[in-house]
Structures are given as C-alpha cells and as structure tokens.
Length: 176
Length: 247
Image (tube, rainbow over all chains, first blue to last red; front, side, top):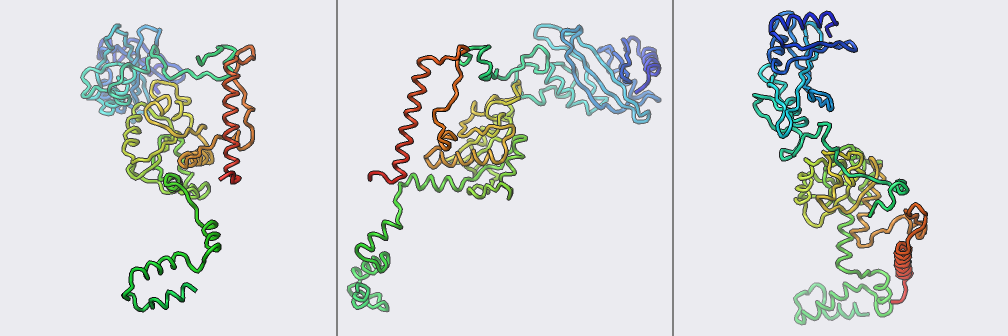
C-alpha cells in the first residue's frame, strides 16, 4: 500500500492529468483508497495501469457494495496491484440509485483488464449495477430467469421461518 | 422300493424305450422327491419349503440389491462417500455398487443443500432413473433448507421431487445414513419400521407441544388416544403373527 503522503501524491498527479477524476482519498488501517468520479473511472484505471512509475497492472478484485441507507447508495470497488512497486491500491466509485426500475450504470473496464469480465457480471448479478460496454452483460451465478438483485440490502432474505416448540409460549399455536 | 421298480420298468441306459412318457414323468417326480415317502415327505416339505407372495419375494430382492447413484451435492457427500468404505461398509446391505449413471441407479441420495439452480438438475436425474426408484434426503439442508434460509437454496428437496426417507443431521454421521438406508429397505419390504419407540416399548411416552397453559385440548387428547389404540392393535396383531398364531 502507498502510505498517506504517497496516496496524496497519486491523487494530485491524477487530478493534474485528468481533471476532476479523484474526489477524495482516505487512508485507514494502512490501506489507501482513492474515491473516484464514476464518470472518469476508465481514465483513472488507464492512468494507473500505463503511467511509468505507477504500473498497477493487475486488477486483483472488482466488487460491488450496497451502503444503504447512505447516499450515494452503491459502490464499485477496484483492488489494484502493482507488481514492480509491490503495492496495492483501492479505488471506490460511488453510484447513486437512479430510482424506480432503472439501474445504476458505470463504464466497463474489460478492455483494460480482461479478468474483470466475470467479476463485472457477478456485480451485475447481485447488485444490479450495469457496466456500460460490457461484451456479455448477463447473470453469472443466479439462474438467468431470476428476478431481483439478491445482495442488495433491501432484498428480502428469503427462506422459510423455522419455529421450534420452545417458541410455543411466545407464539401459541403457531402451526395453525 | 419304488426306485427299484422304476429301474425295472425302464433301464437308464435306454431313454428311448417304448412306454416313454409315463416313465419319464415318474422318473422326474422321483428325482424331485428324493427317497422320502409318506409322512417323511410331508415333514420334509413343512420344514424346508417356504411359501410367499410374488410381491414379497420381489421386495426382498429389491431391498437387498439397491444401486445408489454416485451423486454428491455438498459436505454431506463426504459422509456419504464413507459409507462404502470398509469401516462402515454398506456392502453388508447389498448397496456397495454406486452407479455413475442415473439410468443404472435405484436410489438417489441428496447429500447436501439443493440450490435453486441445482434443483432442475436433480429433478432431471431423478426422472432419468428407472422404476422402481427411491430418494433419501440426507441432512438438514436437503430436508428443509437447513441453515441456508436464503434466496439461493430450495427449502426442502420434497418441493420438487418425492422423497422417501429424511435423515436428520448436519451432516449426519455415516451410521445415521446407514440407519436411514435400513429404514428404506424395510419400507421396500413392505414392513416400515415404526421407529425407536416400538423397539424400546416406549409407545405412549410422547411429549406433546401444549398451549402456554400446559393443557391439551379435548380433540388433541382424543386424537392421541385413538393413535395409541391403533398402534397397540397393530402391535398385538404382529406379535400374534410372529408367534405362529391361528392358521
């Protein structure tokens, strides 16, 4: 991980090269994170991957988060790794819920990191975040005809209630 | 005796003798009977011949040569694998031959949680099996969803296929699965084992979930007593039958 000054340095260089791409930084538990403007995510990833001296060429993970009830609600998190620097860097793009039937959208990074293909499909599958320009934006783990985005925090847990006989005083004759 | 008489009638080295048919009949009967006659023969038949029905004989054969499918779903499959090991050895009950194709299998053991994506696969495997076929739901997950009360797991495999035996446990020990298998065998034989209360003479000691007052309702008491009388009458009929009873 870059230390806190190193993280600020990266953020400043990024903002100098791509205006308005980094909205903030934070450094906690020895881990640095850039909060990125979701409209500029591809510019940031490309800059980090291709700039000499940075070389974050390995996307070790891409995942979605639902921060309900926070606003903006969704986050897409990119975990990058630089082999030459032996350092990891986290990017977070916050996405607002457009409301209604519409889904939040962000650009795909499959052209930069081909390994992101399945991971973006997984984020789509569980959070309903659409990756614009993805070559094959379908569900990957849930059945294709499944309705809903099961890892969202407002999705019902499902299953069936199980009540044991020691619940009897609490809920008399629950079996009826 | 009769044998000498027969030999005199038709020597064995002359099978094409003229009075052919009758002689052959007598010789065949003689071979079947052996040397016994009269009351000796009656006693021999009584002691060594067993009469039964076709259905029972068929059930006996089926119950003792079950071919389970090689089919594991989750962690219960580890326990299921060990029932064929020498330590637990389901070969004692004639089911050591796990078939890798559902078309050759009689028994499907659902060993683990069934996700909603796996459910159609299980159903298809079951449909591909030839009749007669049986299913054991092994463990809490395939019986009721178990700890996986969520969006991804079917809450009990009997929602999409018929299940004959449920084995509780998480996972059940191999002994438990073998016990469930023995229950299935009894079911196939047509004499389902009513359970441990019968073997331990504990019928009538059931504890009933009551209302918070601790009093059972009148209907509950009546249903319970009717069930107990029914079980007791079955018991006495069974013990009479095993004692020999009136013919």
